[in-house]
Image (spheres, rainbow over the protein chains, first blue to last red):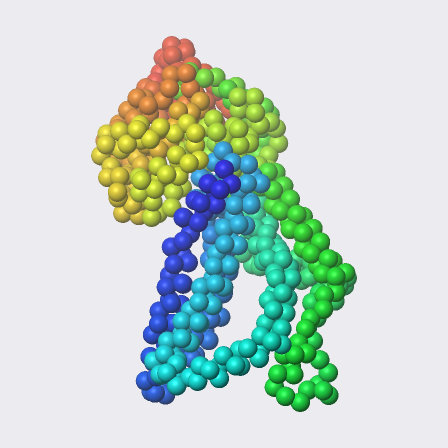
Length: 275
Length: 229
């Protein structure tokens, strides 16, 4: 039933995200030609647009996820969602997973769009034709010889679980707050109250975790005293993991997710008051 | 089938339901009647799990309101609860996936009878068409209980007749049908029993034949007498 719930949540919301992703890809495809046109005011508008849209993409994603939760759970569609023969916990998990899929996809589509933008820009400039591929291969080999690339990949994978947990935590917090403002406990000014509660809980929980840990992953590029060439940074590049801090963050996030998930479940089971 | 014991619900201290006790059995079409604000929709929301903060107990086929009770109830709310872009095909996919008792063939046949285009999305339908669309979906479940909140509320008299006919032809005789309405004259001929709700309290729960015999009046006439200000 969980898979079916997620499937229908995705089917019900893909239209909202399709427009954002289409706009990103259109910018990626048209943007390079505008830059190459050399018309300064157009380039200025394009870069302002790209900057604005980059910020807007993530804001729109966040707002669309809020709208998704509100529409699917607490507006007219909630009359269907909340009367389905599905466990309350399944409903909550489906909403969080759907939100996670969309936010992850937004990051991926954004990255791909920027890559397309860069490739088209260099390709239309003929930049690839003038590249000295032998020299490029030498540089790549020197970089890979330093081991820095592998180190970066390793550190990304080490940091990935925390990033995923952080993203899930934000979504569960969102579900919790939106559930709370749709219960008999909050009768008036639900939107401003919801925003205030989100900020307070978010700040409070972050502060509690911050008391107990420092940085989980510490990057280092060696002692600047000994850096004499451009590759010295890469040769000395590394990272160390503060495992105590890492585990505190990991366990803290898991506890927060479980606590807020349980809170959402309890509110839906005992205090729900859909209008 | 439905046991409602001492249910009281308040909104901001104002009582919407006061100590409601009802025992509704299968094999009957029961009218839940009352003027606007009498608590009909509140009671229906409680039965369907959309209101959870109340006092008292509700049991549906022996279960509290949960995923098991929801699997037994086919619920028609008083509003459009499907996404606007959905057409019949989309709705069939949703219902087929999520309700084990959904009968796709019945749905298709109901759509034809109700003159609805299966490819037309809800956003391009009139209010009456939307009501018929949802009714077709709800009646296509082979449920033990049908709860219909104002099924003829926003449609013209011709459509009302069609909707009532659809209900009568498609519910299983061994099931329980609970219909809330304030348009009594149009619908009273299909009721076996009626519940009168007045200011959140059950003032009458009786078979319609008994009312007609003892009062010598139609249900609508008796309703007007009971609810006269």
